Image (cartoon, rainbow, N blue to C red; front, side, top):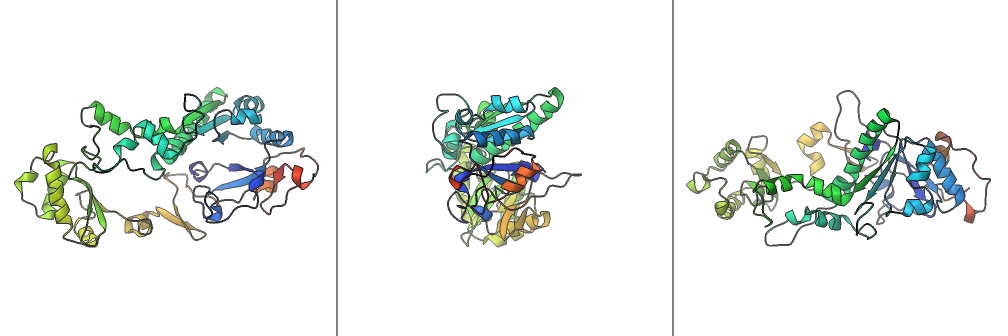
Length: 369
């Protein structure tokens, strides 16, 4: 999605048996409602027959990069691993994203985001002291440690290819990426400023001046008054003169001060706290739900969210001074662009029309030819 937002032409290869099965709202088949699948076209292809593999390799000849997310060895068994692809296109950047990586004792095991961030140490650092680790919804692993790291790897490899004229393989393991996403935690640990007890550290909700608090109306606000001048402003806004708050970084008093702040914040509604603190140097923001966030005045002013075909999307990021980013069309149905994509990519020599059961390409209408 991010590569497409930046202007890359993305062609997704879908399974032939997925043609005609897309259903909006069906689990793992989001159809037009997909946000992550925006900005690409879909070609349905049977990669388990020689004709399908031949068509795939013809597409590779014109590609700058390829992304695959199978378990290690699957692409090789299909006959479209790095070796045959580089034989057809030596400049190809071959991007591989997996949970555990291309090697290692877990490389062939199934897994999900929660498992990958667990083994990296990142999951352990998230949660409250009186509960177990809390899984963030696929943000640190799949999206940050997986997709974004792979996108960076592909762009970096493409820059290197401009100099060397040679392609290469990018091994993006979500476990590796999730560990990298936790770099700040490992840095604090190395400095003696982080321990393994949840909610007892500077940035994990242990500090009374860096946490979320519930308001009188049941809604929540966030406070990040880390620097002393911001902390002083927080106390001023709260009209707190209690000398117990003076030793800001004394971890021994954090739990007691947290209780006092919790009581103070329960005295007003979230909107009242916004009126008092938002836009100041307190380092404050309301905790908005997914319905509220797109309508916040700051997000609206920056067009942080956009609407496409009745669906709310986060807008492309980051932004550039000279080249505009613009999300492409809606998420495709499987095989929706088969005919046009084959023509646009210059794929020739297709097999004569076969029976429905033995066809190698499919269109979104369900017709196979």
